[in-house]
Image (tube, rainbow, N blue to C red; front, side):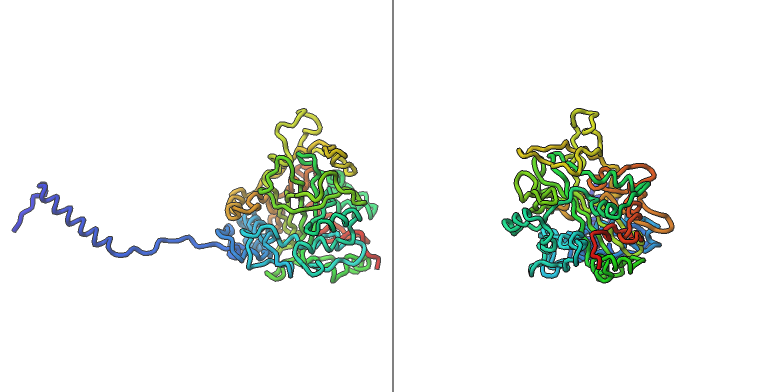
Length: 474
């Protein structure tokens, strides 16, 4: 029998050979497949009803074209409610900016926001001016047979001043006409027609939102207001564009989201800036637009059409479980660092360098005959910071290569009866720039829209200021 001295070199060699043989035999068997993280689609995130945080999509696929209709059940919103509401906001933003099927003005699921970011569905939503125009509303997706982005412009064609019609005839590819230089135009016009003299927070809002917002190039920001088909159909069915219709509907109650095919009423309020010196067009969702400054259609001095970039988007959605609607607001990430803010503003301490202070009046022009700005820029400093920065980072990464990677969700204001409204104070730096900010409000979408009334008899209009004049009398 061979004796082995455990301390001899030969013995150690035999032991090493034995160990290596055993290891080789063990490793020769094929390893099992490595664990792979499950893909999370937009549908997975939209349909989540659990008590924990909502899953965040890891991919952009065709399910991202579908608008979500609820941020979650009342029970689930009590836990991780803000995160769920903000996921709902981002899913809405992606779906609204999904490429449109130009024939139907609905999302084109055969296309993708990643490869076709220039034709978003929401730009085909009908403009509020085409619904409340003192006559019958324009038809949905009206375009003279073309559909798509042209629909929005065609719906307003009859209302344009002669000078603007001439420009449109010369530039048939332009789909956007911008005239409103104050986001609150529909609110102010409604109360003026009623002869209302509001008190309290509403008075403060009216005093603070009628002034133009001037960017760092001396150009006015401009605003559009549009609504989706669910809201449009309800307005037509109840003839809320007429005085008799509003009188006959004492309890205005826009449809609440109930399914993927009935998402509920949606209103969109967009803010745009004329791109110029210092702006990188690749960082903006852009459109060619005609801009003008008065009722006669006097175009803004300088070249027209101009390239405008989206700088803000409010999404008001009567989502399932949200009687006071859900309010999401997005901004371009350079709004308060570059486009509407100069850290070296001079003279320091002057009115024109005081944050969030108007520098122009609603009746002023923006440029002189020589094309030079007439008004000092407004120094915009945000009151509200993004509620879920990590969520912004996730979605921005998914949208890399598109202009939408340069947008961020400021937050979503939502309500659950058990906990009230969250966040309590909420707004957009470029859409509520001049609204007073204090611990009691009225810097809050829900607090402001609680004042919304219909024109003839002043009944509540379910959070919507669009149910306003001018109206048909019969």
